[in-house]
Image (cartoon, rainbow, N blue to C red; front, side):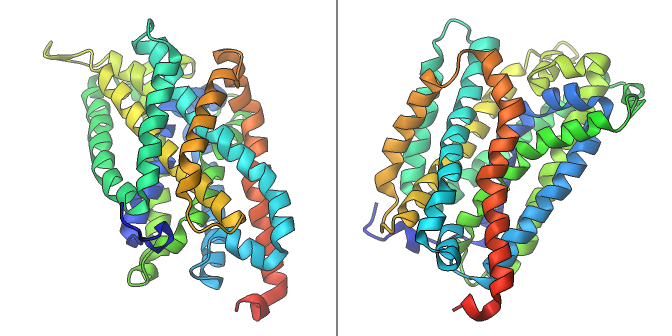
Length: 370
């Protein structure tokens, strides 16, 4: 690692789009379909469209602030608009949720491995390894993250696409109807759930936009919006494929794509390929954990006006690992936290501060721009 400050590293708009797509899609494509179908039924894809539109609204707010304060992250223009102390007060919710979110991503992957693939292995083995690799990657900086994610996104996309295509003979389009047998309430419930995870988490991109090089910054809005739309479409396709494969039982599949891979059979040559989905989940969780860890360390360093965020990376990874050991009382308790507390906490941590900063910026006008 050279002596160049991490803040001087830059990526292209396309590379940031890949990071954003990997962060948004990473673990959500495995974890979202089953629980979402359980809440919204056959209308799960409608819930995703609703929450996706709300996510686009968050993206619009972030891009507006980035255009008004170019080269500044959320923390930096928040301090400029509201002052350091008020920013610190609101950041208590943000920082605590980022820690919860980072630990939750890793914990969810560990629970998947010990419940579905390697039942005799202790949970802490998986959580420690994911945190160790993510910390090493986050320490290297955003340029290394961008180059590494490019290859991983391609590999994971091929794996998931292969599973969905090989399961074609298991699909029954008739299972898609009726779309709303119980009315609009389950759809809205599903939208609330999917907005909390992953679309409220779009907020983190506000910390990474300043790293985009000036040469490609004019393409940034289109790249971010395209990445988000692609994310919504891919998760919608996963939900539709899960419904067509399992029908009324789709909502009971916690890891829907893993269950789908389990039933794939192709002329007795290709069978039992669920390990592909297991690998995809681990890779996706690694990418998302890396982004959250990097943003959390960057947030702290900018909040307290330090020059290098690397000093926080290892301590935060260790703290996150400890939270996975003592932060929940079992998988049922964790599911309750994600379903009920997570969306509300995410709103207080991400949406409320963003809207507050946006409101102050609009009312103060361009007099605060310089």
